[in-house]
Image (cartoon, rainbow, N blue to C red; front, side, top):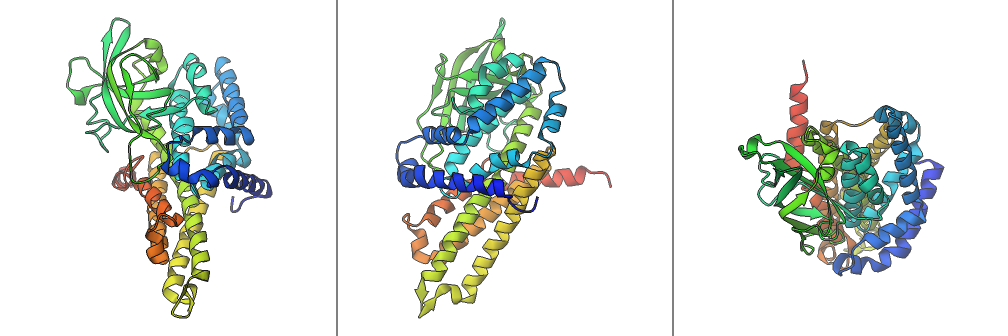
Length: 408
């Protein structure tokens, strides 16, 4: 795939009209008010039939699993050649990120990370119980792995625990920086099995929790640098009782570390589409400003230093667009990217977005530092792409370890 086809361009233009009508006029309230993003996202899902498509995909997979089919193989066969389906999942991400990257994070964690974890490792009953409502955004999901003292060492420094109590488990722990945490209906909670052994030797388990369970507290939204339209919070668990039906896969043998890595791959590849939307908007705003802003008697776009900034932005845009096209093509063929490939996507995309945003702010001069100009918001929002889902430094390590482990 080297360019958008006519049908994809029609989808993109329709989504742009929706954003212009439903999001742009309410951007101030979404970014700086107390309005969660979920209602407008649900309206977008219904307007474009995204919820119905998700429901149909879910029902097909459940039917195949119920018949004992090889789900992974059949999913690849079903997706082969369907670039429009893959594009439809990425185009809304790109377009939303031109104005409101936070909404994409809120949507992606609920529909993507949380639902994917259940669909990947859950039993048939668990998928029916929780996944469909997440995939259609009827309910909000949170994926809880990060802790106050863990950071990038998510597993090694994990203190959240599960202790057996008869046929149930007693869960304790504190999670932080949890996207959708304050409003989540369904929470995928990752912890370690406490059998009296040292924390570093404990098995990782995953549970699915519901808001309102006794002992579970969800904090108010945290204040942060950017992504204001993506509610972030803390989770506190004090002796939360969870039955075996809430243990993902209903067995302790499910390898939660590998499941989390699959989720990380999904999250990291999505950053390329997010970065593309941010870069496209920064470039558009910068070109318009360079044409109209006059300094020393002529438009600043006539100065070579400004032209260099614009040219570098365009190079980043083209590279990111090609990454997205590659993802769409790979997805349509049923090909999954490796963790190292996903890390490479994220490393480049996050750095490219941040560099373009900083150059856009510089091009705008004093205006670029003012909240009245959108490049200020996009610059704040872009920074988190280098932090969440694994920092730039973690991506470098993942890529290098993969390269060094390959046989000569």
